[in-house]
Length: 479
Image 1 (cartoon, rainbow, N blue to C red):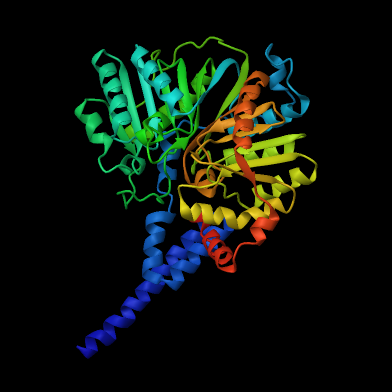
Image 2: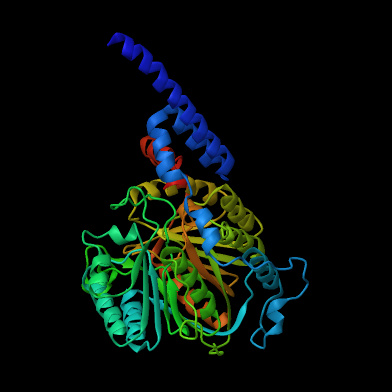
């Protein structure tokens, strides 16, 4: 027995070292973020078996190679072109010159051209959004594409499931895509219910640890609904009854969604079709999914798809560009605020240039670790003149950026590493003053019901609280 142990022990140790070397090499070669790479290498060597196992389960992007194969290729644009694309539209009379540079930046980052003649209507809260979405589903005649992160099998989820089933029965082509992790947030999954109703449904990228593991990477965090290829909804809202304020749930969430029509719908449809192709290996083509889209309004807009594949950093670069282009104001609402060093510096530089930087975050978040990590970083921004305010309950899940009261970015992404580096997200940039006015009124209402964060308050916290927040902040790349 002693001889066996003496032989097996060194063999296992040697195997552990070899596996750790291979895992560390993979980290060094493929992790772009230096802090995340250092953290993973440290974990692999400090806990050889556990660390390597966690990296295999959580740290490796298994989706990238297949995503590159299945997703349509990115359009290459001429980055040296001097064409000022907004000026080509009759809707661009009030387009401010410095925002032309912003438009060129996003065009070069995404490969997408601006679309003109759109209508973008904000829907404030689930009490406005869900009835509009359900009415659209009931009105669908040819196609319905629905992609969401969370789809609970509760009263609201059941209402959506029945509406989708009714659409299938009347001959509408329905495709439903739910993130594999988000589908398991509730105790009973809506996937089996949709399958029972004969609604075509797929889950996106099931993780190795599947059941309610919220910190799994490579999630499809997009929220998209397209109707007959001519109307779409997008924003930050999931499908779950706990968010409906009229139901007086113990978990109430405030949020913002958008109804879109016009040529911008093709950008939304393209994103849904690419995700469905990835998950179901089925191409969505034909006039039912891609009809001719006519002008419906005067909003200039562009879709921005983002994810840990060929679309990596498209939203992050857009945020950096917005901070750089801003001349008067940056107004931000986000439920999770964990910007990396480059975004912190960009916000601080904007404030030091004299730009009014206002950031609204929830007073009471729904993820304790994220809130603690967020609190540990606030002093870096407050110290440089950024105004950070905590909005009163209910928890505000809104995601919105307004630059100079003219340029708007909305969608599914938060200001955190999970959204900007690890998840698949979708945003819309808009150039429209009338839309900005509506959104500014929403911002001001939230700002009124908020408290200013001061350096005095941050410094008055106990050493134990500050240490707790600081330690949790070290794990921010994984939160």
